[in-house]
Length: 412
Image: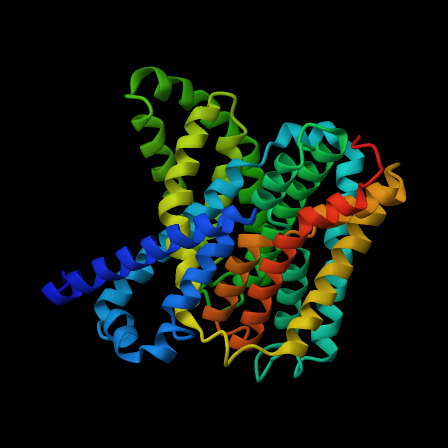
């Protein structure tokens, strides 16, 4: 078994230290300006990466991130774990009973908020594939990815915005959260099928992949949930707390991730579904969830978001027209789709607009989608930069636009 050399280990620790330190500094600055920590963490990556450090101090950048392929490989392992854990905690925030309690209204908002952006995101890249950056890949697969990327909503960002606005416990707040949950589950389901055709090494056919994905989803949300409900009380009673529940949660998260990766779907989907099943259990306490969140959000999440900036030069790959087109499609799709769904559900025009703005936050989920597509050669660096910019702008504007739409309106 190969091991890292002395210099590789030094280099790896320097990388991790630089990434975590700068991520913390810029996350604090972002939060001072009432912005999500992810905005600061992405900025830290851009500063550490080829955009700033690589341009102005190429020697330092080369020493830190280019001189040791083995250290970079080890760092990539950390980043892969970070992505899986991020999807795991996104799943933990899904409360299925909340989705059922909102019923048809949540279904209407989430489906229209998924279908309309998906259609817009599919049609434009399909007919203008060269403009959107498809060189010689599969146009249908590329357009399906773009449709999915436009239709996803970042549940953690939505929850945080609603809490900041004191809307979380209102009828509108519950409806937006429930809709975002349904949106997330269906969106990741579609994406997992797309991923199986991006060179993931699966020998399954399209029908088999869809069948296995649906079967695994159904299993995790029914029998999987029942098994977890039976095991958790024993874990809480017999094992050290919180160590027992933490280590077993992580172990089963990695098992589910390994299973879906082996299937050729993607590790993130298994982690997400395990998170949904575990988070919905009455025996998974809020305190235990909070410990998991703090651990992942403050150690692994920064490593992932900083690593985004290390991969690409954001200046040389920034294309204004492409970014504006992506922004236009993303805003139009969510506001028209989710807004119309809310209007059909009995909200007035202002409140419906607020629902549309609330569902428009993309955040981390969009960036994870984009990165996986980039690594699998489905999109180019220019489109990836446009998607990252869109994720940041939609997350930053979602709250202020909701406030604007609700001026003079009851908060429901």
